[in-house]
Length: 263
Image (cartoon, rainbow, N blue to C red; front, side, top):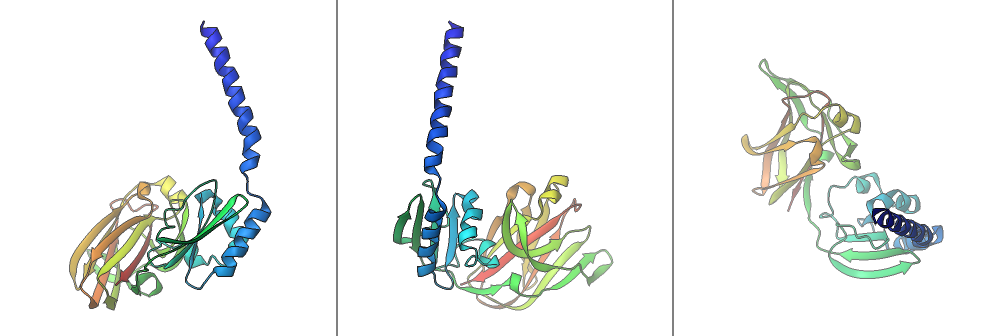
């Protein structure tokens, strides 16, 4: 009896695999499908729009057709809150989580779907990644000029992310900004850069946020956290903002940090 069931299971498996082999090519979008979809996006694209692809693994194919519109900043964006219009280019019924708001238009080009969404966009008062902080290192001997910190396109959770690359060592690294125009909240993201660094170590990195010398928030980033979001309500106006970064296990730790002051 067991042999009969096993034989039936093998026959069923063979049928399923055969069906998949026959059906799969029918689901593949052609180059013409992608070209036609890209032409529609180009015709309606406006400066400041966001383009996303779904599922995520289709991103490389999508950028092969629309890469000149997908800037480095767009490819490494942290969220879609700053964008009023989002173009979603998708296949196989997938939906990108950032394609949200009112559906303005939708069309299909063979196996490729194009949709345009419109929504209110956050106003950004201050982009910390775009500004040069005063960088210092703090230890028991005091505060001294710190390591080199620069804006980069980071690799965090296997995706490009725009932010500051902050090397972590045994000291505390401080990033100080004076006269920062704040809105009603700070929105930030932190994560650990570089696949090989995450593979070789798993120590956490702590980010402490101070406004006018008062500690307001502490965030801990771990390998498994990916691009970790944090948010803090703030009093509008100009303030001194400082980030302090440290780790109890600093080997192979490279922090990516992106923060914006939003209305």
